[in-house]
Image: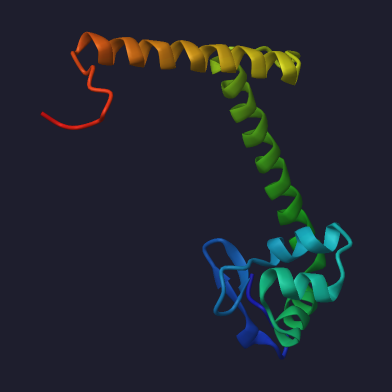
Amino acid sequence: MIATTNQDALIVETPRGPSIAGTRITIYSVMDYLKGNWSRNFIKRMMLITDEQLDAALAYIAAHKEEVEREYAAILRREEELRARYEKVFWERSRFTPDTPPEERRRILLRVLEEKKRAAQSTQSDDGNHDSAGSQP
């Protein structure tokens, strides 16, 4: 999909999709902010783009609305599938269940940390590192 407006030079086709020339900002990144109802000034500040660049992105989105909306929806679906997959892997590897309260997680993690600290100190003692002054032999 190549831009056909008079702002062609500001929107370029990249492997990641149509993007603002000279940046790594895709039209779909701009869509995230638009869908979040962020102001024009906020979008420009967050993306470090000019009025001209934002205008070109908005014109491109308007000119290719159906195609951009379809691809944006597909991106969001893929993103959600990845998030769900990685969350599943996280919980499979976690020592906690998803419903473990944060306070309980904290207590368990502190206990594990204390055990590791004691084990490390014990290993140092067993290795003969008894020099409390910290000087080297």
